[in-house]
Length: 250
Image 1 (tube, rainbow, N blue to C red):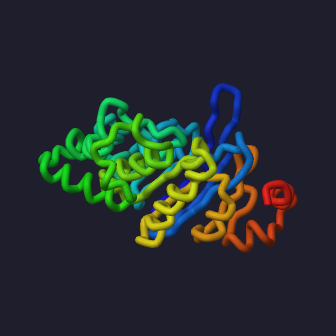
Image 2 (image 1 turned 120 degrees about the vertical axis):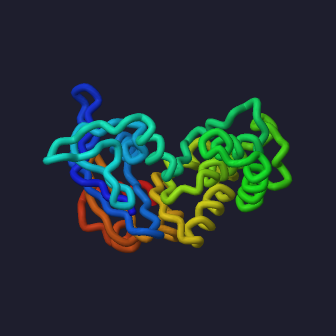
């Protein structure tokens, strides 16, 4: 579903991603763990074309992202084509980024109405269905300021799902939440995993990785240090850097 091939990313002289390669199979949950500054979030932003890669290739469902390739040379895709590609990828950020002047339902309806141009009645029905799915049907008419952080993040997940994406990316979706609100957001993500949604999740929640991940990827200093099943990477790490990390967080 997602293939990252030898991707590099520079910010000026800072080499943030240093030859990252990653494959995510359809319906799999790939959880990326690692210290702050290891390149995890940058990798997600590159997959969703929020950052332009410096070298390498990224494919989603076999389609090269952001470029067309002819005779080994890459040519930028037009903005409209990039928007079409990006519409197949849902992304949930650390900060909820909801429209403060729109209700929960209106936030979820916005993209189907504006981007997919579906009829308002259909968008409303979809929005209510998705809010019900994340346990917030009774909050449909509430504004973000009237919702807890966990509720806002669940609205953000519903909003991402409204575009019916093929892949969901989560960038530390619980890091801005009070500890008692983390579980309700992770519960929604677990439900998505059980439904067969392909997901790449950057998180510090090791327990969540153990429970949900098909593959755990440990990153540090812009490279993938170790990868494998949760048991292999978290409990039986082979690399010293991985062992050091988990000895401190477990």
